[in-house]
Length: 565
Image (cartoon, rainbow, N blue to C red; front, side, top):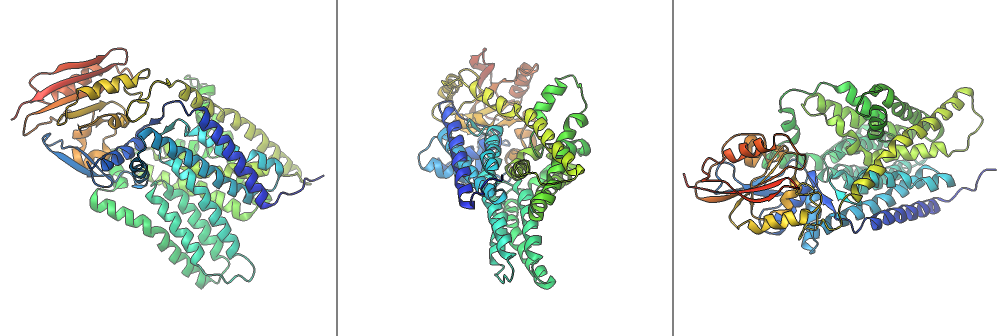
């Protein structure tokens, strides 16, 4: 006997309650573990830190001029949009520490995303079983991104906003499609502007929002005459791209073009087929880490095609079944959310030496949750009389889902283990962050000792082999960072000035003291050689003295005075 159908309102309330409850439990369980801010997000936090301290203007970072260490130089940050830095600025002005601000942003993003996906869930299905299962995709994303213990990528903030744009887009399409509807185009045009505005939060949202724009353009336009449809599409395209082109123009004027920067960096990336195949195979569930660990184990037992093919089959079966069993509009939207991001990333990768497709899961996971919810809807639908082919398809859908869930389970397990390895006494004052680049066991002691020897006018050189921007948040004074991720600092430093591996000399027009901070968290075999090469880049140094050494943590701090030329 079929179960009574829950009303839309009850479905939303139940799923929202479950999402908020489960997310709150996860964050509460890990609340006392020191928080991490790393990678791209550390750049944004440092920008905000300097702005609040009056050391830099909005969306700029002040660093030592690599052409003359006596001076400072400001760089307009065009590598990321200003949205994340702005969020940090607001929280810093309210008096929150770096750690508290990052954790609050993650909690707010997780809850907002959970409630937003509850709204989308209520639009997709009616089954009671589906309502119970609906919280798992958002919860899985919280674990996948380690939102409860770190803030390392801006895509997690997209997770908090994207479902609301989904719900608004679906509501708009349904409203405009009512029989006899003569509504204004203003609602869909407003949605188009909001979609384009998300570019100010994260550049990579362009692919997901472009898919939603295409969905709005075609789904709304089909209800009108060709002339009105063309008018609507042209205006919606202009409205969608207005905030995007505005920010692009500002960046070009004040800083540079991130895409042009990538496309000018040497040889082009060639292995497109394999990367695209892996990306498509992990749309439904991120099976990559689990598949590599179980089947490869470092020995290449099975080829990538064999271990990833079930993921691709699950994607194709889900879209096909959505067309047949749920609705054309949802299947069309799901197809766009896959085709547009992958095609865009393939294009960028084909014109660059960087594999943008490798990051497809990170960029698109905040909205690929929509496909996971469709899968839940399909699996929980009451099977009606169907032919042999449909029975085989349904059985395959169930089996492939089970296979991918087993492989994907590795991700929350690894995320929890990583968080639990952080010592509860590892928070560095005053930021409250856990900085593993300094020490995996006692970064607070290392960071405090380094800050104690830094003077106001020192040139502070955090030399990190791999990223390491989180160390900048702990260091006062005038920074001259050296890193493998030197591209965002091109305008201030030039490539050689920021490159950890370069040998271009640094000079100063007046006497200054240099504090070289050289951590080795990855135990590089050429570490001593790298430190010697970096010291040699300061030809004015009278002599280098080892001010601090932490052998257990492999951190050295060297000090030298630079004489005037």
